[in-house]
Image (cartoon, rainbow, N blue to C red; front, top):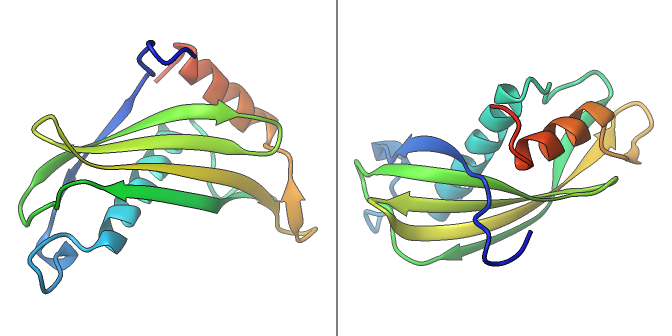
Length: 141
């Protein structure tokens, strides 16, 4: 996808709760990472994908997060997820956390799939690969 084309976003509302805030009265960075996971799991569920399938589970291989502005107690945020790249062995997702249109943080995660019985990485399951590519190219949800 070219840089001038806007990627399709899956949006999840997030509210910064009291327990998300640290001693500096801002959302702790670990909570923002948890918001990414919440969006990712909801997204997979919307696509009808089983996160805890019998043999294959997605595992976080890489996380890159850039913080621009703090999230504050009571903030109503929007977390937008995009499918950046799907290959046979990995999935790259992008994230943008916004408050009233202002970007507070951006992130990228790289996921791989782990075979529980074999104890090693495996190719993306066919259902994941097909659903993610279909969604990225305009399919549901």
